[in-house]
Length: 345
Image 1 (spheres, rainbow, N blue to C red):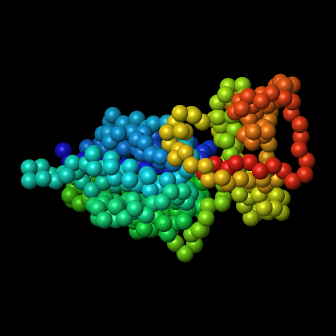
Image 2 (cartoon, rainbow, N blue to C red):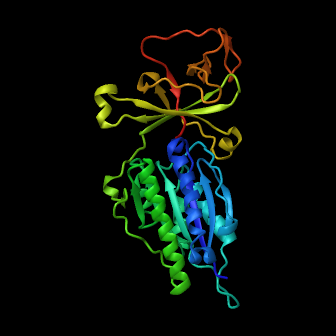
Image 3 (cartoon, rainbow, N blue to C red):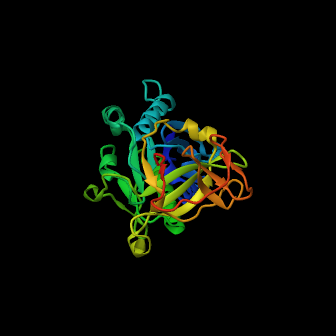
């Protein structure tokens, strides 16, 4: 049987934490449910999910639809697109059946690349490898989630670069409906017409548009993410802030508003992080909103220890820092704020 391999290469960096990664996870479930009732897809489609942040890993091996179950998405530090692309190519080398004198190989693979930020690694060598050996033999669709991606970088990989500007629930729902329709149409094409060129449905009524590289941003300064640790459970969490939109400038001026706090799996976070400390700080005067601890519910999720790290407090008169073990009582700081370390995002 000739398979139609479908890979999802998904950015799980810190800037994706919260609603974006939850919507992608829910969207994957919807895609699989819809494809399972399509006879053409059920006969040909095999799915794999790969995740990348500072490093990359396989969340789901290439699996036929009726056996496939969408995984839980982890989070890591960094947006190493070059690492992700190399990992994808290595997986395809292992997974894809090539055509030989004795057997016809798999159909041309479909790859959906999701990212919401600018690469934090040196991606040029991986891009060269892709363009030299894989580009002509794959259908790659790169999707920019939000307005923070330099789409001219993605256009070095494929002419199919799309922008999902709105990231509300309905926009994500319509977006994943479009992905499902594109896979269905392509699986029908390979089954009936023996053509594995990507079939693109109409995007009318969807917050999805062709990228215009002249509008892309050169740097990604739209998110500020810092890491804290719960003093009750000793588990890490991320505090995510988004740059204020234009309609909020009169309220907060130049700064970042709180999006939410999110517990993370430390082992998976380390596995997907490249381990680099870029030494970038942000002043607390630029951060608006009072986070609570997502692990234990402590009222103050953004307490800064003398060691420079962030932890939670609120239940005890005498607190201890889970990073360095220092004990003491809380005190307030007035004036110019405090510089804290930002993650790579």
